[in-house]
Image 1: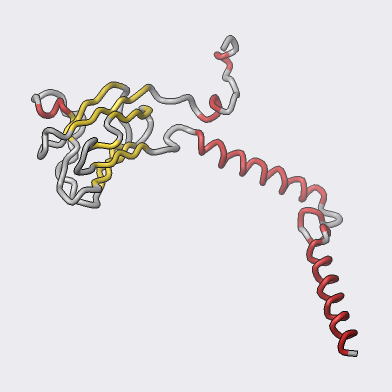
Image 2 (image 1 turned 45 degrees about the vertical axis):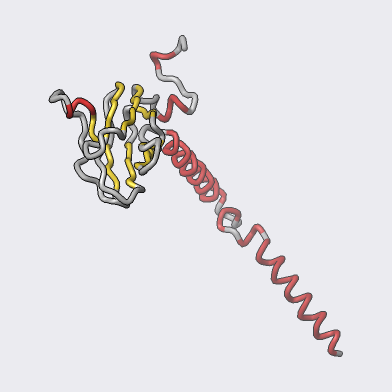
Length: 170
């Protein structure tokens, strides 16, 4: 009799699992809701497509440069970014540093100058025009790095393989 009770409990559990897995319990597959089910599937598909597209769109990724007390003082010493990408320098050392474009030192056009960056803090530039930007730490001039900024990337639609009207010959 004890064995039979266990079998009943076991069978009830199995039946319960079967009920949970039955497709009719899912709102997409309920009888009489075919149009609504299709709309939901299409909505989910479009939502996933938008998430994927946003991952390859302009400005989706950041460039991180680490400021450290040993060579290379800026890691990577030569970083490459696109014109639409944010760039962030993170001070991982125990000293105050700066991120100063070389033009600032020579009295020229000062593209960026972080001012003092405390240990554990960071400095961010939202975007730069394409070009080559040598920079240094104004407190420790021997600390030098180079930032290469390439023209902005293609938009998300082009990067997914779609062409606009003016790109037929590509």
